[in-house]
Length: 225
Image (tube, rainbow, N blue to C red; front, side):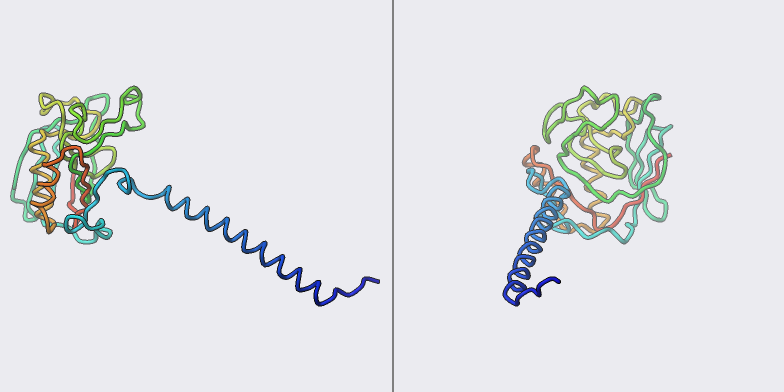
């Protein structure tokens, strides 16, 4: 017959078990914190400035409302058009579109983010296997000075090769000249109600090596056809 466990023995067992459970909880907490750091969006600690509704704030909350303006990319005409909600044309710009081998993808999306002085990371596609990343402000950065994000890695962006605009030579994205890219960025910032347009554009213009990511207060519909 087994001997009953003395009260003191029970106390020691309880203490040992409690310490064991606390140690396991500590390990799980550290693992969770590490995963959270790994999952942080780029821009936290990499020299990127992320701004929301005014310069220096955190990114805006997930976009809900739709702006009273929309963007169209006419692949055949090689044009970017900006239209008011009523259908009136606000602006028309020539653009480079995808080559026959890497055609621009048609569809409908929303533009929810503008990047000033973007960095270029080679996409996971065969044509980019030998390419090197390019920092903001690098003369060889193919994204130029501004980027309107709608279907990564495909975006509307500036270029370091303005002679290509108006041709079917890109790898799927829509290229415009740098001046047009900045003008489009200003337009969508203004039409979505962003509160610090001049401030954020001036800051990006002063230092082309500083990447500035702006979450738009409203979504801008885009149709590529």
